[in-house]
Amino acid sequence: MNDIKLSIVIPSYKDPLLFKTIHSILDNSELGQKLEIIAVFDGYYPDSKLIIQDSRVKYVHLGANRGMRGAINAGILASRGEFIGRLDEHCSFGKGFDKILTESCKPNWIMTPKRFFLDPIKWELMDIPPVEHEKLVIQSGKKFSGARWPERDLEQKDVMVSESLGMQGSFWICPRKWFDDVCGGFLEEEGYGPTYQDSVEVTMKTLQAGGKLMVHKGTWFAHKHRSFSRTHREGSPENPSNREASWKYSLDTWREYFETVIRSKWKI
Image (cartoon, rainbow, N blue to C red; front, side, top):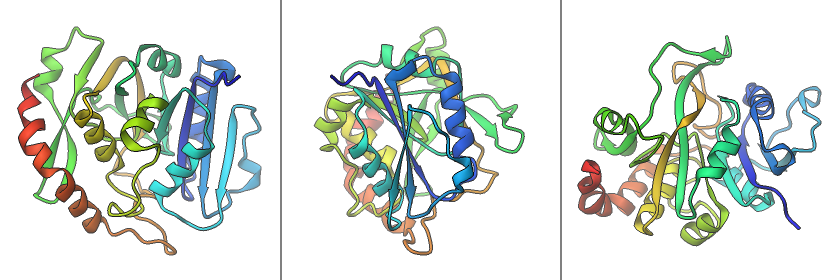
C-alpha cells in the first residue's frame, strides 16, 4: 500500500544550493516518512560527498540533459505521492509547510505558499515584503508573468487560504489525480521547449478545467532572489533553451483564454 502523501520533485542542473534546499525540506517537514523528495540530476553528477543519505530522499540521474521540463517529468514518473510538488533547487521553508499544504489542498486546486526572498549566501530571508496574491500579466508584450496583486492582498488580508490568478512557479503542489486529469501526467516538452513557462501551463490548464490556484498564507517558502545567479533556467551547453520561442508558444496557446476569461476574474 502506498503511504507517501507528498512527492517533491526538484529538477537540478549544477546548482550548489540543491542540498541546502533538501536539508531545509527535511528539517521543516512534519509528514515524517510520508514525504518523498526526488532530486533529478539533469545530465550531470554532483559531488558524491554532498549526497544526503535519508530514506525520504531519492535521486534520479538523466544520462543526457533534457532541460527543466524534462527533468520535472522524469521526477514525476519516479514519484509515488498522493500529492506532487514541483520545486526550484534554491529554496528554504517554514516549519510544517508540507503537512499544512497537503491537509488544506482540495481535489481541484493547485496551491502555493506565501513566498519570501532568500539570500542564498547568508541563507536567510531578505528584508523584502513577501508575495501573497499574484495575477498573470503579459510582460512587455512578450511573455506571461506573475505580478504582485496588492488590491487582492488587502481584500483578503483576513483569509488564510485565498484564490489567486498567477504564481512565480518556483514551488507548488497539487493532487496527483488532478495533475493527471488536466495535464495528462506530464508537462509538455514540445512547443514550450525544454525550460520555460511550466507554471503558466499548469495554471492555465487548471483554471480552464474549472479548478483554482490558491495561496496559503499560513505557511511559507523562500526563493533565491533574482539578483543572484541561476543555473538551470537558461538551459545547458548540451541543450540550450530558446526562451523567446517558448514565450511565444505560450502566448499563442493561451492569449485568447487569458484575454476573454482570466482578465475578467481580476475582480474576484
